Structure formats: structure tokens, C-alpha cells
Length: 276
Length: 277
Image (tube, rainbow over all chains, first blue to last red):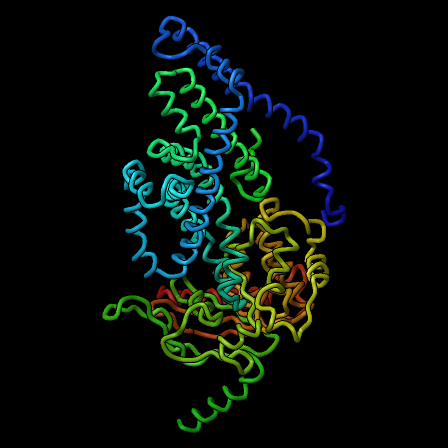
């Protein structure tokens, strides 16, 4: 062991790893694709016989062919609302979690407020925010931010408190400053929790953006307002086409998070695959 | 009596600048009107370069005492002086190396990065000592870990992880090493190998060590002095010097002298449980 060069164990396992990866790729992609195919088929069979309830699959696809610009534009608007809102909400939640992990009194006094914010139906405050902030982007950002705030706060707080007490002891005997404990210990320990939270929060922020658009389309016309105006005109094809775009956005966001998680947190057990 | 006390005080002050002195430590845990004493009236001197082991039944407060010396717990009464400094000052100038029961490594850092951690923390204090990462590399090689520098802790065996944790405590050259049952989580074979490794390492650089264990053989093999503690409350029962020659080689545990010390420690321990011999 001691005589071998440092990277030997890694280089020895490159080839089997690659073929296993390929086999795993097949395992990963085939089941969801089959499942998806079955659902599309069932949808189509039902739609053919109930034309007034849901549109057929070709009709939905046709929407994208005839009006690609409309869906693209609305998608970008909703995406912007969701991502900007969620980023601000998550950043604020994280900062508050750091402060709360330092100060129990702060946690005890602010946590009930956060819970209240969490249990308030977002649909209920959306009209109020429109009155306060107008029809622009601001109320959408706020709603997307508010909806992600609580889950991110709770996860970040648990993550910041996750380090093993014995590791903490080592830091104390080294006379590490609070900042050093945060930077070298608590923050890296927190990362897996933040990724898990982001996986929930980013798709959640899409819901926030759509709800915000429902209550006030205004100057910003995203997928939410498209759904609402189409529903008012009984244009089911456009409604479901928008839903499809939203679904794709959600899948895209989740995949990016999962990919980053695998890439950045290879040290964590959650991103390791067990040999079977 | 007063003569004796005066001599004791002189002794303690003489030990102040050279070695560790623990004087009159009391500690109780629990709520104010329902406190149970964990350690009572502990007085102990550790000279420079001595390997001192605390041994006793569980609940005798040996870990508590170690954690008091490490500055992780404040005593109710009494004081600890580490080479003439208070625990707080000693920690601030990074004189204390602590090895906990579990390896307690950072899983996102490689072996070498884990060992470099103490060099990156509380940098102001180590400016005088001028330590570099090449030291960490050299040290790991001398620990027999030169081949795994760039692996992550989860890729190592339990014994190797514990050795990395010990290297992390050695790397910044602290004045005293505190080890809290560092091998208790290992299986018998790994324990044996790690104990042997620590023995060789200690013999090559003679650090001052305070070591906690519940294994009699481990205590006799490693120590210069064995401190036997009794429980409820934790008190020092006896201090047994181990006069086995150094360096202690591979077969020291087979010698008659070894067995005599071992039997003495076992006998004293049995007494602390109140059982007839």
C-alpha cells in the first residue's frame, strides 16, 4: 500500500467504472421513458374519445409548431420570475439560518413568524402584494421568494447544525474563530442539505410565479397569464401546452440541481452509488 | 502539615513552566440543587515528554478530566496550567492537540487537506512556528499514509482514518497531545496495529501525552505513568509508574515485567469496583 504511487487505486478502476456508468445510464433512462410513453398513450386514447375534456397529443404539439415565439417568450418571463424570486428567497433564508444557528434567542423569536409566513396561503396574499407593488415583476419575485423561504430556512438550519460534535471539539481546541468554524466546517456540512432544499424550492418557485401571474398578469405575460387568458377563452390546447412547458421547466431545473449535486458533492454519501 | 503543603505548592510552581499541572479540579453536572460530582479533587502533574494514561471504569470521569484539560469543559473549581499558561491561552497559541474518540475528519477534504486544516485555522498563533504543507506531507509519509494522500476519508479503513486524525493533531507541533480513547472504535487487530504505530511514533519524538483508555494492556504498553481512577465520584486512586525500558519493541507484552505491571493495574482497578481480590 505504502509503496504504490498515490493515484493507483483510481486509475485501476477507470475502465470497469465507465462500462458500469453506461449500464447505469440505460437503467436510469429506460424506466422513466417507458412510463412516460404509457401515459402519453393513455392520454391520447382518452382524448380521442373525449375531445371536449382534454386536447389530443398532436393538438398540443401543434401549438408549439404554430406559435413557438409565444411559448418561448412566456416561458422566459415565468422562468425569470421563478429564478430571481427563488434566488433572493433562498439567499435571505440562508442568511437568516446562519444568524439563527448562532443565536437561539433570535431563532425562538423569528421562527414563529416564519411558520406563519409558511402557513399563509400564497394565493391569499398575492392580490394584496399586487395592490402594494403594482403589476410589474416585483410582486412575482416576492411571491416566488416567499414560497421557497421556509423550506430553505429549515433545511439550512438543520444543515448548519449537522456537524459531528467531536469535529466541533477539534475546532475549539484549535481556537478557531466563529468565522473559521462557519467557513471550514458548518458551510460545507450544510451543502448537501442546501441541495436537497433547492431541489424542492426551485420547482416550488415556478408554482409561486404562476400563482402570482394568475392574480395579476399586468405588464408581465408569463405562462400563468397565458393559462388564465386561454382558459377564459376555452382554449384547452393552449392551456395544456403551457402546462407541458411548465413541466419541462420543472424537470430541467431539477436535473440541473441533481447534476450539480453529483459534480460538487462527490464526497457525500448521498451522491455515491452503492455497488449492487 | 504546613511543611508538606508548602512543598506541594513549591512543586506545583516548579512544574508551571515545564509540563502540565492539574490542581484541585472539581466538576459536577446537573441542575443546581441536584448536582452529581463527576470528578473530585484531582491533582496531577505531567512532566515534559511524559506519556500519562488515565484508566478506570466507565463513569470515573476520565474523559471529563481530559476535556477539562482540553478546554472543552470548564471546571467548577481548580485550575490547569499548561507550560505555565492557562488552558485558554494555551489553546489560543495552539499548544493543545486533541484526538477525539472518532476520527472526526472532514469528509469533503482529502487526507492531506484534513491534516493541513490546523495550519489554516487560527493562523495568527502559528506565525512564529512557520509550518508549511510540505510538513504535512512528510508527516503523513512517516505515518505510513504516503500512498493515500489524495483519497477521501470514506475510502480508508477505520484504523487509517484514526491515524490521519492523530497526524492532524501532530502536524502543528502542539506542546501536549490529548487523546480520548482514540482506538476504542476499532476492532482488535486494527487496535493492535494502531497502538504499535503510536508507540513507535511517540518514541521517535517524545511528545507530552495525556491518554484515556479502558484497556489495561494498552495503558501498560504505552505509558510512563498510569493514573488509576475510581468512579462515583471520579477520584484518582493510585498513580503507577511503568518502569519498562524504552524503546519498547514488538514483544514487550510477553515480558515478565510487563505482566507484573499489568497485574498491579488490574488489581487496583478491581479495588475501585469494591470487589474482593
